[in-house]
Image: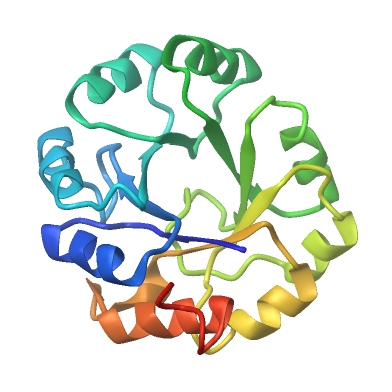
Length: 210
């Protein structure tokens, strides 16, 4: 199961990722969110990152041109879209960047998942729904709805995951991967011990350092 730590903002956060080796490290690159950093700051953070951890740039309703400009500054392995992006924009980004494109879905019901599966994204991020808010809310997704929908496309489970509820979530949902942001923090700052515990839960006590 893949692991993504999102909302990384500092070189120290990236060093934590180097030590713990999640599969992905996410950076918020659209303005107006608590964990947003500028492309220039993101480029500095990514410079700390080990090649074994892939960088994910998170964009919310950004134009293709904006994303392409950001890619000139920040080396990314994955583009993650978190707004109302269309299938045509996803296809355009895949063609122009040759990068995988992931699409976040605020899940209210099975239909939300079915619609997202038609967009052509390489992966889905299934998270909790909060009216008038886009991601990063720390609100749990409806695990039972996701499990019953049995998504046909590989997906990450996100939204309100913590070291305390992660085992239960994985048993109910059995996702391709897990995506944590607020669950890796204490007082809004990345917490190495919480991040370490997440790695241990997903990969097991004896294998997490490999």
